[in-house]
Image 1 (cartoon, helix red, strand yellow):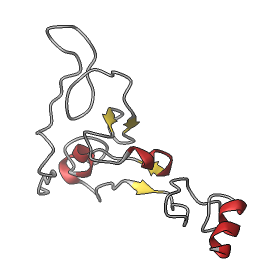
Image 2 (cartoon, helix red, strand yellow):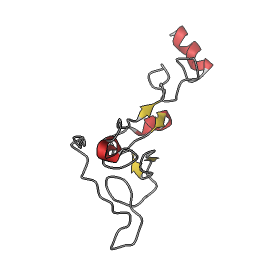
Image 3 (cartoon, helix red, strand yellow):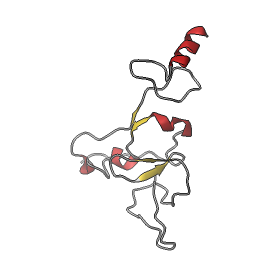
Image 4 (cartoon, one colour):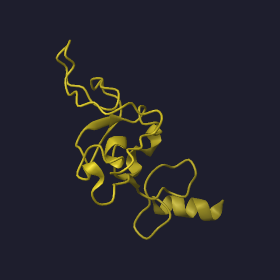
Length: 123
């Protein structure tokens, strides 16, 4: 079987979906409710994860192409649990070349927009 490798900051997987005390739905590696923080849905297990808990900067929110949580990437949950087949990885869209722009590139471009393409050339 695969070595179940989780990042050091990631707690062991818990199947908890509801706080037993409050009855609130809980999510993420932190098993807290959704308080309106930025979250991303996992394409493997369909749970939702806080960007802050995963150490993903919030400005990357438009660059996620397909997201897999640490548990799915380790083969603990999701379609490849028990490590059959290759384990999924989060895929990112290419980021605009302008350093402080976090929008994805247009197709066949290194920039998010023609404006940014021109800006880069004129720098």
